[in-house]
Length: 468
Image (cartoon, rainbow, N blue to C red; front, side, top):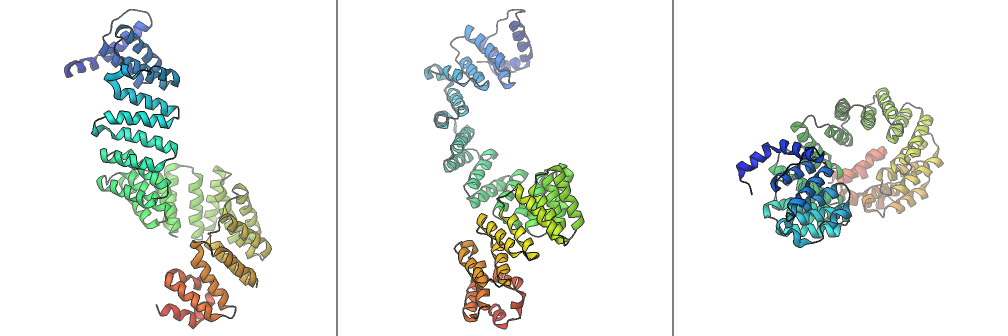
């Protein structure tokens, strides 16, 4: 082997060696290259994606240095890169020929099997390479194994391997992101959050880690913590444009419409004509009562993307707010035509029909909305109010029976059941139900006064809250 000075000499003269080799390929002259120089030439071609020349250089090496099986490995790797996978495997039939390069032999076979989507064999050969690799160099192989488990759909096995990668190299950011992704995929959001927080403790200036942490908090609808994470991301890197869009969504979810407007405008400034950004800017304006500006932004969104259903829905809501509910219904129906399985669209349409006293159409839309999403508490509440206000007492009662079975609906249904009994001459049972609701969640139980304002004038009802 060359010493360091000789290696530097080779590096400095690589361009000259490449020029001579390419002259040889053209038949202009014959040159003799020693084994180390040829290895550098082959690696140069592979790194630069010139696999045909890499193969020719490696074949030249085999002609003159046949015991050097590194050239066989390089030919197999070049074949693999060209998509000649069977040919690549055929070059690697005899493991005994590669004893001096056994780790690379195993890694090359693993990579080829991965390209063949044969994850079981890929994992097998990655593990054989892992057994021979120094402990401080194992994290990348762990990462390769984890990716194969993900391809197989075995996310828990991937998590186990990724945790080993992180133990091997705590600074392997890719491994951290992958383990958080796996936890996210299987719905273990708390563990994903823990992974990102652990990484941030060691790397507090990683804006991408803060961004991904914010995304996980958004998935569990912890909007305050999501905004905190997005803020840190933004402070570290103001030019990271994706964070503005996600911040806007978080502000919308918290009903902080002016702040949502500000960051959506920033998003459009940085990203240019983005249909979703215009659409959500329209929503933030609509919620502030800036109806004409909202309409302009919804129209801008549709001009960019004519099949953006949320923008058509927004236009329909704007028309309804302006008193043109019939036109609003047409536009909301356009949104449904584009996205017929969206439960919230049917909910909005049901409320529009209710507003113009088309109760039969409203009921059909409410039922469709709940068919698509039986856990939509707002739809249950609005449907109940529509039935109750039109004196359809029995239907209102059956509605509560139908949707009480879902645990997430229980408190909303119980509050509505209190209201039903209160208005059907069983106030004692009604108060008993309300009392249980208050014990379970006093804050949410106070929503009953928003739904039915007349209850705030009932001392028996208000006194239950005063006792708490």
